[in-house]
Length: 139
Image (tube, rainbow, N blue to C red):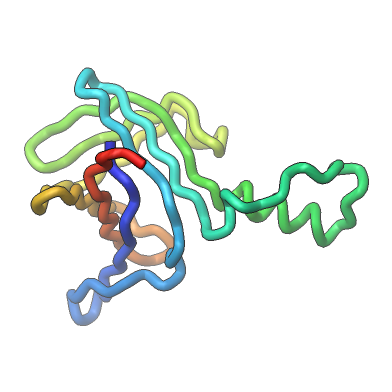
């Protein structure tokens, strides 16, 4: 199991990686069971502290939109994985976005000490991402 550490984006002109400031403060975990199953969760800043005790019927439109945006930005999926050379493929069985059920994505990967680095093969919001995960040793 690995704990989310940081995101970087690739500048396509310079070829250099830099901190992705649009994802500062995200938290989460990724788990590979060693038998071909995996799960991942990425939470936006403030997700853990969000007050969900309010009655939804008592909320105004602004509050409801805030909740919808927060839940939409929480990224979770579970599935199977396969590894070929330095590429891992996640075959999604379920996800927070039902449109992603049954889809796959590929990540190039490398290890540096206790860090797992996943690199998107596709562009996300116009950029390739490099996601750093630190080996999780417990709370």
